Image (cartoon, rainbow, N blue to C red; front, side, top):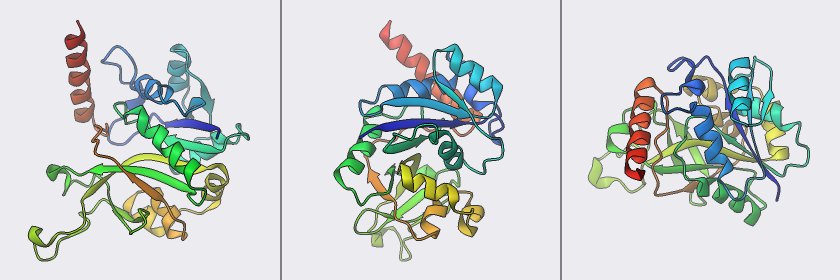
Length: 249
């Protein structure tokens, strides 16, 4: 199975403008993410999809591969879909958003292997334990699953809510990680779908897929990678990087 990993990157993030180029570690953040994807065993090709010359120059500067896309994409997955058209031989396309530099590359392999093992899976993603302090944080996206392990709903709101208190809670609290694997034809289907009301309301691109009646498998891990949404998240990442470097010397 031929799998490509495309990292959508834009400069104008509302919460953290210029995030892909933040380089207090000595390397731009987009390079950290690129190297994580390149370390996965089941990924054949890694590239960045962007509409910004500064990001392209940074990627090419560290020897990475970059594809320029239109500037009017409403979300990362549609940008990935455009870039994927240049790779007609790909069976699986992974949308690895550029804010998970500490993700275990083995999780990307797990997405590919799940789709290889089960031909009925058109789309898949990842989730892990939700920390207590993330329960009320709209920046931490929650997901609830059906009995087969497919997503029932993603939300920025606290779900599932234990109506009768914590003692009555049966379902786990899961945090969604913004990594998606699509079969090539399913990704083309996504790109043809109009943005949906729930997607627009929650500002969660994956809801378009569910709202159009499609299934998304959720692979649950015990890991809890540190995503980077804000300058504060990035500062914590820099501290962790420096701590690891100090431990190695």
